Image 1 (tube, one colour):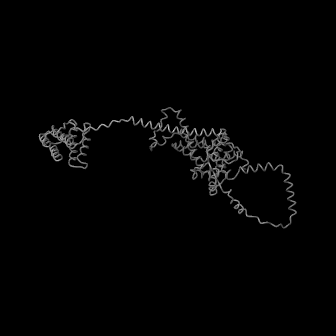
Image 2 (cartoon, one colour):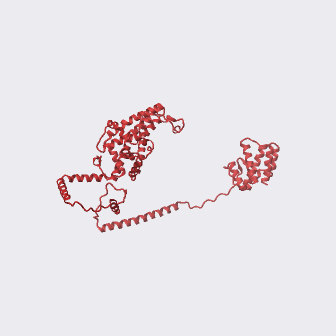
Image 3 (cartoon, helix red, strand yellow):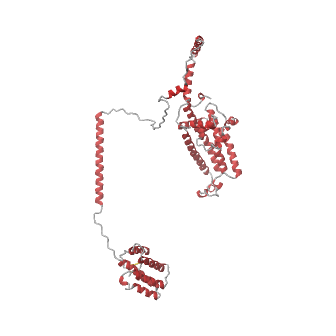
Length: 486
């Protein structure tokens, strides 16, 4: 097969144009491509479902369908590669010549090469060129110098598109299933070890099989277009075809002239002496090295830029010079005036804001007045006995433990408010009063602050939890009051 037999337009394309070329080829020859693809893919799908049914594991069908993708790829590439050269093969002919595409490294593709991210781009090297081993690796390296990145991105894009097709078909299938029968596992249940095959059904496997059979030819065709474009760039197929066309146009009218030239050359050779003096022939490698020293060779530049599809038409300057000058001066003057107006407006807004602020002096804070009662307890010094500790001890000896604790608590609060200048309010709780009192008695733990914590805890337990301490404990708290607030 020669480049002149290709049924596509030979020209250099960008990588994404080459992928689009592959999709155009699939659009043109979709009948034979999908016919052969389904002739191989449907039996494989049936075998995968049979294995899943026998084993009782639905994931087996998914694994088989995914793992055998290189098999479907070879069928599609076999049909496309011959259709490009004008040979359309029907499914029966493709199956009859299965040895041509089965014996092209399928086992290697299913093992070591299964996770090749540029599979559709590298496949023609093994299947069409027949290269394997080191020669195939070097050939793939040469072809992939400026195209492997695009081939990898093609794989990534096709994976996402296949996922979109799967989700779309699955959603469409769910629309025809009753609501109660369509209740699947929750997100939490999917990660449980007991979920197993309950997360997947044969319907999901059928959706995946349909997505693979539908979308795999697109992936192979795009990779094949990328491969053809790379060979056109490296081997100059477009130049070869153009030169052959020029030669064919000129060879017919010059047939007689060529015959005459051949006769003249024969006569001239006959007239030459028997021992010609041979001239030294220059080494081709040396000549090529000298030619390649020219700056025109050995330079590759690839740039990308954005360009409008319909650039605006250039308007001819027909305005007089004085009119343009007037317009420029007017625009400048208007710009300066706009800035002046904006600045004046800003100053006016600031002035209005300052004028709106209250100008009266702040009201001084009212001095703190100790409350007459707190937590329902009278705190006035005249309401307490002169010796609070002695009165509490007497109450404790009489068995009036609750009254003794109440007297000690009142005395402590009165001590904090009237003598220690602790600003307690009626809105404070016992806990807040304790924190303020300990802060006033000293930042570090002291005897007074420790006693205050013990007394408040005993009073809270007695008042709210109904846990009355013993008379001895009440007497110790009275003695502690005398020591803490002596």
